[in-house]
Length: 149
Image (spheres, rainbow, N blue to C red):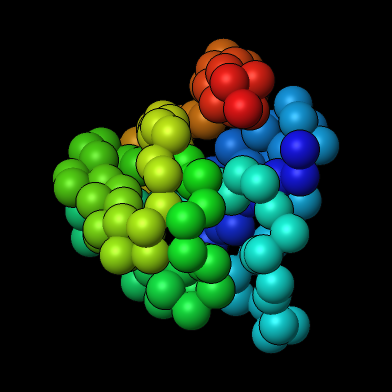
């Protein structure tokens, strides 16, 4: 099985840490959706999409990347990191994948370190997150998805 995890991660790299942990658990290729290189997702059997939550949803760059690059009918999963609340989370990405006829296998989420807006004044929220336990949970999630294929 060939797998890829496409991610958008800025600020503190919370989502990148989760994507890297998942990739180590299953030898998945990591793809930064902001990289300028062309991407061919056709050879992949399983494709993950991961982003931090920005304004209560995944970053628009992830959804745009998904719409441009996801081949029809692929098996996909989602992951996100968030500050205090997940909001609508990966809903926009799930909708975009559904438009491509993708089979959604699941979603992983965990808190991340957040210094956006007023949280910067108090040293941030979610210090130490994602934690080692969060990353182990991300790996277990990935193994359960990949192992079911």
